[in-house]
Picture 1: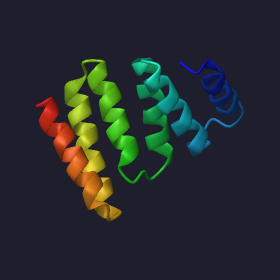
Picture 2: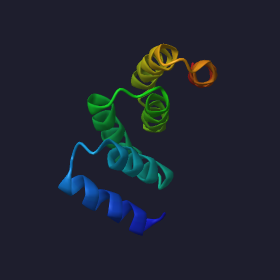
Picture 3: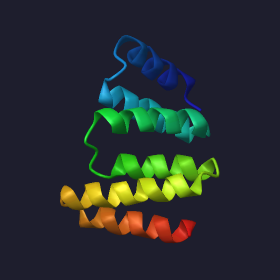
Picture 4: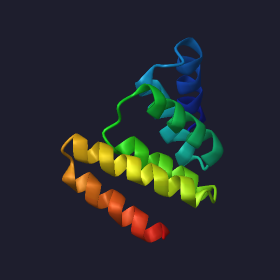
Amino acid sequence: MNASRIDSFRAMIARQPDHVLARFGLATEVAKAGLHEEAAEHFAHYLRVHDDEGNGWMRYAESLHALGRTDEALAAIDQGIASAGRHGHPGLVADLEALRESME
């Protein structure tokens, strides 16, 4: 775990709670560290304040799935597919569909 990166992102979030890049960065770093509950919270916040193009939804779904919250993960995947489609990312749509298949 890269504690200094996590601490840096946490400090940024403390100053600017809706800073989308810092929020996404923190969520990503804590997910890598296996802190899936915290990652899910940060991804959820990020997704509330930012029109994500699909990748954030996929990472959120992965964190939820790691917590055993598969129904919520599948719903996040559906949101991600809609978002990726809306933003013209067919490859990401395919990745999200494959992720859904792996969870079902």
